[in-house]
Length: 350
Image (cartoon, rainbow, N blue to C red; front, side, top):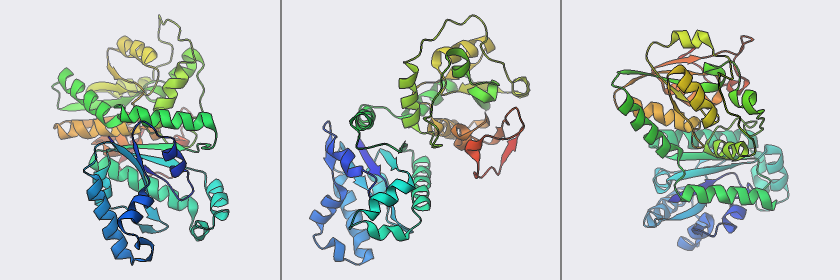
């Protein structure tokens, strides 16, 4: 497993690498300057060639984690060679205000304050996410970690170790896609979000009072779904004997093809709901926005036409990828705040 850890200068990548002791940890900048001691004085085209060269060298290694840079301000330095090098990408998102403070206190990184830090960071996340979607790579955002607190760095390191041991939203999507294809020979498949799409309410909140701030940053990657399942373990789940939520009958009545539920909700709760409705259901700690996207992609590659229903950011990439996409409004007639500013072209709002 080759893992790339990305983020802006002063985001804490080196600090994370220092705590990884279960696989080889490589400082990208140190490795680069060992390869070319004059790297800092080289013209930009030579620096690009140096980056490509060390990526080819590192392809010979099977198992490591290394930090990297996607861009410096508006100058993208990420190469196709970088992309091919890694199986999974982790991005450390830090609030722009904190990054500015760290940069201002760093002689080496003060020069980056001339850039729009917020826009720079968002461009990197969007660029890496798009690359991973196109090239079948895992992508995870670790958002606003207080990296210098021992418990939080422990969580991040545990997550990285989990990835190195096989945690993969993309592989999980492959598994789900194969199972879906084995269950139906229909040419058209409907992929359906659960909470607030098929149901009116959030099932976890209704059934066991679950509340979370994991998605406040609007990053619905496998890191957030993984942490959510850790939070789930802190709750007692009651036995269910009747539907614990109200079904959105407007959505239910519109389903004309094989419906498959893809949910990041609690598996026990959603297994009950799906069985009551006679539907297939796929859930788990690897069910993220990326997972839904890749399931859509893999089913399309198998020749299926995909109809998708969703209500928020966790469904966004699935909706954009689907052949026919339906965004379910909230009960007050508005759309989810998580989609504010997103391109909704090609998606029908219902």
